[in-house]
Length: 142
Image (cartoon, rainbow, N blue to C red; front, side, top):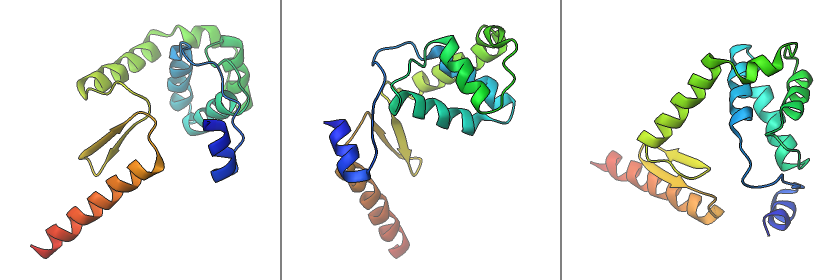
């Protein structure tokens, strides 16, 4: 269903990886990429690997290949994945998500006021945007 909708409505081919994998290694590698100024490129490459190439982004060898592809130094990549500083950054992000009571992916916050969790149909997102616009118009009229 998701694959068909993505193809028909957005022209995207989805060949997603397995659900339920441990994404922590990818999150740790993301922190390393950010520390090297390559966070955005790495994240995009990981998303493409998972959603369009059905690659296992929980496997260190796959992550290392992705890291090399965006120009990161991977000489001690195993060390990167066990680096306490990067692990602590991931733990802090998870703690912040718990504080905000986020327990679904994706979690989108609109106008610092409306939270939409989980994969939602476009119509739901459209309703949130319309609500924000209506709120803005009523505040402007006051």
